[in-house]
Amino acid sequence: MTKSAFFYVQPTLLDRELHRNLKVRPLTDVRFAAEATAVPVLSVEWAESCLEYPIVFSIGKDGQWLSLAVTGLRDGQNLFVDEDGRWTGRYVPACLRRYPFVLVQDAAADKLGVAIDTGSEAVGEDIEGGVPLFEPSGEPAPALQSVLQLLGEFQAQAGATHQFVQRLMDAGLLVETNMEVKGRHGQVANLLGSWVVNEAKLRELDSNQVFELFQSGELAMVYAHLLSLRNLIGMLERQVKRSAH
Image 1 (tube, helix red, strand yellow):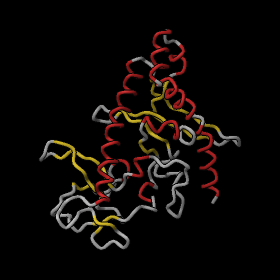
Image 2 (cartoon, rainbow, N blue to C red):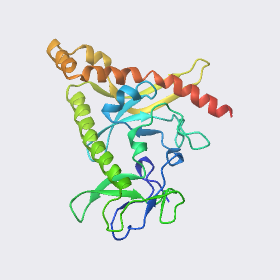
Image 3 (cartoon, rainbow, N blue to C red):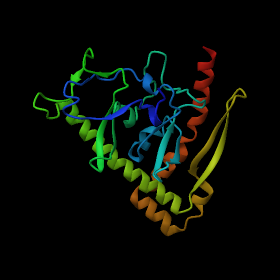
Image 4 (cartoon, rainbow, N blue to C red):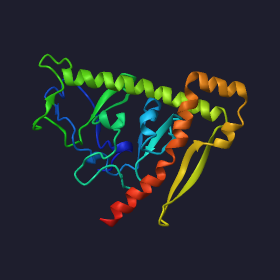
């Protein structure tokens, strides 16, 4: 089965009757993300993410801006998932921590609903070490209650991230570019079709615009993004090491 965007195989809306016996096992294996060359990161995560991952921007078919942590330089290869399914980055993005849950559009109710990836090996009725999602009464069990809170916070921050990146676009600060990375020993990798802040355009802002960015705390976020792009060299080194094994 072909995976949908960002590693969900079969996201299915939760139903308290159909899924009353469904269980989920706490995730310790992230091989579900082993082929993801980028994962979403929220703007509130940039302070941590910029120390490890290149952060770039992308706009979806729905017109919503995403900020992405680049995790691979070759199609189908995530350099932060090792052969044992461990995430080797110091910071684990929230999009990984919410898996196998996600909010999706519930056409019948005309609102967002909670879905679970029933294609995940961590989901099932007879999963060893699994915890129930629903109480016998049909009400959400503690595990699902925690997920609901996480998903609500994620959705709100995703909206804030879109609005921030859109403001950067409206200010003429974003440019779509192809970046070439050269390693210390002549290795080359390319990052194609990424949107990034144009630092020259940033320096052209007038003093009032700069002060507004500074006062809102957004100027620090812009520089976190720009600083993060230096991580491309470290990723190239990761790729060289992996290719050598």
